[in-house]
Length: 339
Ligand SMILES: Cc1ncc(C[n+]2csc(CCOP(=O)(O)OP(=O)(O)O)c2C)c(N)n1
Image (cartoon, rainbow, N blue to C red; front, side):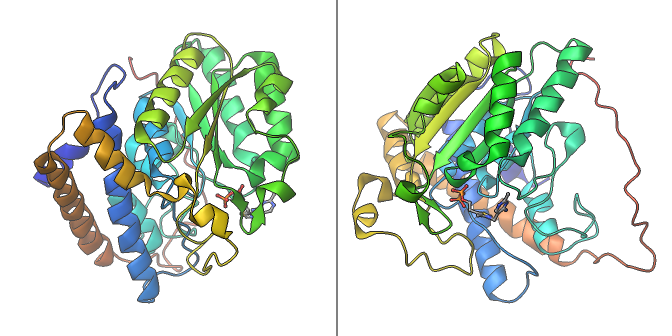
């Protein structure tokens, strides 16, 4: 443990009410993802790299507002949410660098990592496929009598067109599951623009179609995302059934690091959504009374944590195909956090 780690600790009980905590995870995520992009360009990473640059305000808000006993099923652009939910930068780097000590034991590509026993199922890339998994985890919690759990999962605008999204959201609505369905509408599904993706004016109108609550957030404003998410998570926890949160934003990077995003329209590049959420969040935090020194301290703590995790992951062994047990047979029963 380095002292900088304490900058990124969440309160052990109760719900965080302070957006500055989410801001810290936004910064940590950006520093970590910039590091991962450099390692990729240096040829140190095998497989794809998909970043969440521009989506951190939304992602960090979800992860920060969830606690022990909750479920978080992240999507590819949810590094900030993963970190806020409790994943360590070391676990992320171990996966990208193929360390045997990583959560997937160096055997799976980069973004498909998770820790199911801590409420974070390993992500799959099939769009919408995780929603039914979260429903299942919420059913299991209900059957065990854990009535205080919330399950959140994220999806892109493209994913909202899949059958999996519609079937699972419908099921959650009928069963009144405490599901927080977060849609990051970054205006492109890879390169397919919104007008080729859906015909309704706003994805929020889908909430009405399913008979569930809907909330809109401005995706590049931390305060907007945090406040919206706070209401959605609280409503789900209090028995209000599924909550659909739609945030309009832009991803400020390609679909993956192999993509130059040349298809992004000029109108999008000059829109207010093209403002980096980290810059917006900086201004918001200063307006809320934080000082330049507070923000600098977060930045340098993030750099220290990421430097140390990179050095550690780089010196760890790769999996040994001759010695490794390739079966995944270990089952872990998750006890209620209060027991
Ligand atoms: C069922 C399924 N169909 C297609 C793909 C290939 N695919 C991966 S990402 C992607 C676009 C996703 O767009 P969106 O949901 O808007 O998320 P974004 O990448 O914009 O964050 C596609 C088509 C897939 N992984 N799974």
